[in-house]
Length: 228
Image 1 (spheres, rainbow, N blue to C red):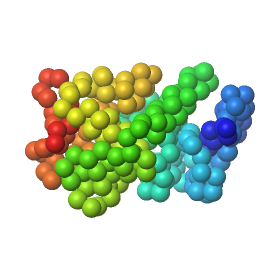
Image 2: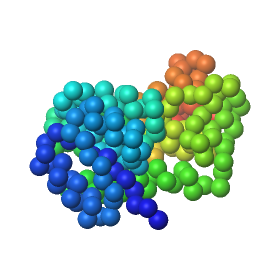
Image 3: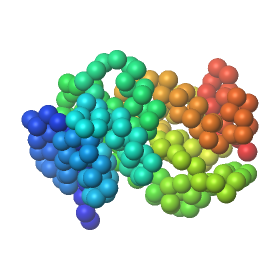
Image 4: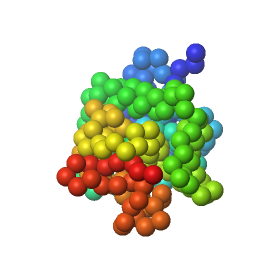
């Protein structure tokens, strides 16, 4: 069985080689790029299973690379940032990153994050379900897409994962902490605000009126549930 392929985009040559070395030791296939333009070419040509993406890059920064790739593919994206400002982290999540790490970081933690992200991305493909239907909303699990009233929705991988989890458990209420654990993983470094942000994006895409949601409902003081 072929190993998972990881694309690492980092302009610090020493860090790039260190990450590559450790990934190869873990049995991954590794592709590298040192700037934003190379990153786009490698992602399109090599079709990696996961992208490790630095924010501060020559030519195109990591935010731009993430924004472009999110329109083209659904691979998990782990962003690396040298800044501790929460704004950068939220921006990364808003444009479609699945997780982030702040430099400096331990290689052990990076490898754990990569394993967890790949594991979660595969869980949705193991289900016997091929699709879930909630009214006019059809979630095609095998093809990793959602269609509302005949129109395909543009969802990030994490939005899709969150939608699938809530749809599979329709009518059940989940706290933000529970959703973080089940959809992002127990080792995710972000806080519960991440859940609120993704819920807001989903509502904008699946609700006729996102300020008065009918499908994705807030249960005050508890969390969220899917109705329909």
